[in-house]
Length: 433
Ligand code: NAP
Image (cartoon, rainbow, N blue to C red; front, side, top):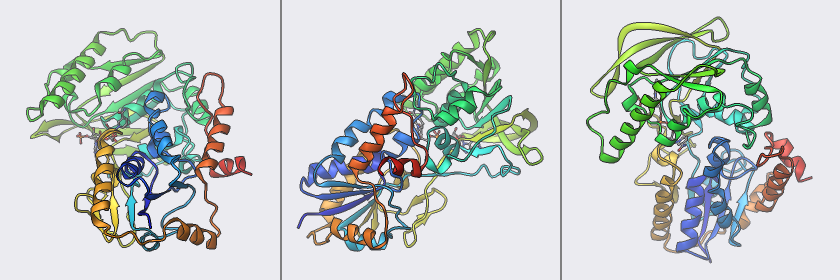
């Protein structure tokens, strides 16, 4: 009997696990279970639509998915259509590769006002993720504030700052393009609670902000006087120093003649969202950095805005019966081993850090652990899952089904764009009728 493994989640960490298993146990039966009809997790729903080259990594995942011993069960929700306990009974091992889909709250008064979104929602909205199709942010606004100094914050600011022509070769969802490019937005504030030397942007992403067609990057030179923190390793130090150089270059570029301004504001921490029902402004406290932490100075200012995006990190979701670390927003595990045949990889294991390739190590390790732990394969695997889903009347999407959806999206693409995404599950299922 071949080893049978269920991999829950079809983003990078799930697919790196599949690839590692295929290498170690070429005859393993591997089933990928995905809540959405569409595969590839954050490659499809997180990576910015104007970063198509980054998205190309799906080709490697596609090769794994097409191996004859690998099956894809899209549109199957673990927790609703099948439980973890049921999967444990059906498979020799269950790998959770479910990421960190939840936004961390800002934890400040007023964050429940209309017009305040976490980045998971906002990014999901512009990327055509079915969970956020109806988010419908009102972009009839002149000011937007993005909180956070990581790559997600920069993605949000850049997607808001680019013109229709700059986005024409992307798969930005059409409804998002209409809202963003029809918006009178003028000022986008990218706010870091610490200094420019502490910002987590990677340099390529930061440099892009100085090359936008109709948005000027604005930096106050006085904020660049602090250096980079002392306690960095060489690689991080070089990255942060390059970031400072890039920010200095921004201060020398002309800002006139551009429709939008992207203001880099450092040493500013959000304290309250102001407005009646909707956000009208955000109150910020000036900070200074002490022992690596942002500390309030007691000096406050307000930024007028109709949109706040909190890009301050993500958290994972709990699964009944599995130990969860609320503070980190991850499963509790021993180097990926959750216990009783369950393994964790990717952000649900490590928290929301690292780049796509960082997940490869998790996949390799989980595959190795599974081989060590499962002395004798004895589970029935796929047949049991299919029987179970049939008995529940679940409509699962096979990999061939996904390829039909993919082809339809590509066929519907506006000229120059890679695809026009279906942003609802119904539209996707309609293709398969
Ligand atoms: P991140 O890099 O951890 O950045 C989070 C930011 O939020 C930090 O600047 C952090 O400041 C700030 N923050 C946290 N809590 C805050 C609070 N209460 N108030 C104000 N600011 C707060 O996370 P991310 O941007 O979500 O990205 C997640 C991962 O995906 C990262 O590894 C990122 O590099 C990766 N990613 C990569 C790309 C790319 O390569 N193009 C694109 C998107 C995402 P402190 O530093 O002070 O904590």
